[in-house]
Length: 317
Ligand code: GLY
Image (cartoon, rainbow, N blue to C red; front, side, top):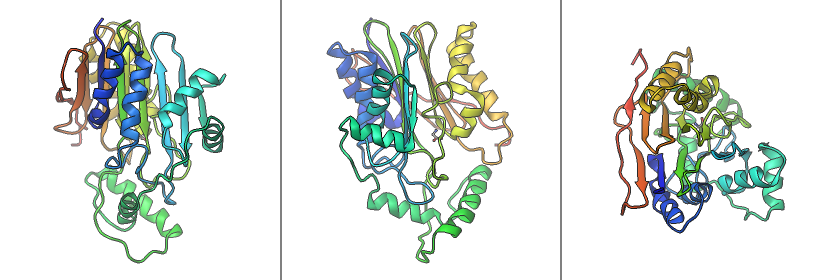
């Protein structure tokens, strides 16, 4: 079977490496970790790993999960501080601990015990961006404006810096990578620094198996980016796979899961995206925002393609 990798658009920095792992006979799990590790190391990406945007207190907290579709094994870490390699650590949780999910001080401790290299994750650029939203109004949707207002309120209580610049990017990102190896095994990985300016200790969907990540060789795999609190409430990644299990095609499964998401009454609602692959290697993405893409590459391709995602907007625009 031809190896195949699908990911969120920011996975383009790692997708060629992930495919190379499959070409060398590596497993889908190996490919997911190799692909995401390059995104976690990318200083240009402020939504994942090193240079990720920090929480309310200016601390970078990383979340990641990995799932094996062949046996439903899974591992996850949350609110990891001081270590960049969140996806590799999630895999070690899956393979070496009798647990699925380790967070906070326990995750930091595990990284140290396993000899992961400590890293100062907060770059000067990420810190500049973090400061910029503390008193700016760069938000573009009602949900983001509500989130920003709430964050601003919280931040005023913890920050006394009067020199706050006036521009900020979207507060969320995350990387998804789904791989199918030559044996037909699926693996799905997700890694993120979570919502910037989040309340310390907040976990989104990314490290939660079933919410932001799910893989089952029998039906397919799915992963999410965007406002994790929505995917948590709808168990979105598991829903997509379950919809396929009960007979929906990939596109219908995605549209149904997106309809569930956009029906939520969420005062902080903002962009939410899914990327998915079925058991036969068909792939698709969906987003509430126009013009969004995902990346895909097969072993027999020289580089990746970047198809459009299905657009499923919020009904209120
Ligand atoms: N989807 C990433 C997060 O909400 O943290």
